Image (cartoon, rainbow, N blue to C red; front, side, top):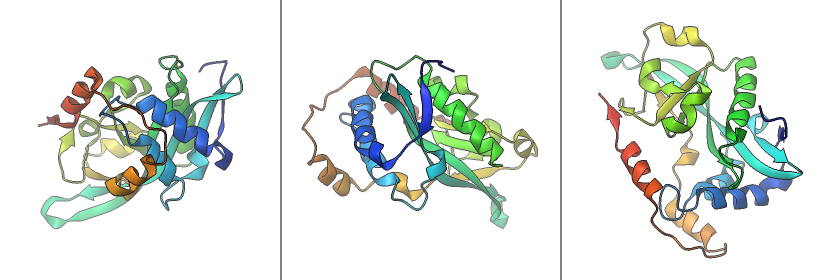
Length: 220
């Protein structure tokens, strides 16, 4: 872990700064513009928000990173017989690091800190959608390797899981991941929120091409 950062729980007083930092970090990264800052705006008022798993990284008195968790669950896939065991899990997102501080281990430190807490609480796994390039170094594997598919039964390349209780995923069971509906953003509400903010230019970047490939890639 970085020795020059302090990880602490986020507070309501951090909200405006976290929204602004998230907008700066994600703007034009995956699509022209972004909506991750709107997710930060609404998530803390959602029933699936997990306040004890909401952390920021601070360097020299300034917030330089953040991670926020929501509740998710796995439903055992029993084929024609329907769903079986329901397992409560966690998901995070957005994970954000301020521009100028990225690729310095801050995101990895936030993941490690919160994963340790999740393991202590008895959570069997953390499941997200993201780029394997960003998360495999923190121990995440493709959902297929853990027997976990998307809710529709398919295996997206970007569905990633961190097994905190490895024994649970070594029993040959198959599960489907269901994340919080908070991630299903209302475009009209997001647009209304964005109209309150300073206008920034939306433009194309090559990183958007990689993102487009990832979200269209599935494993057989």
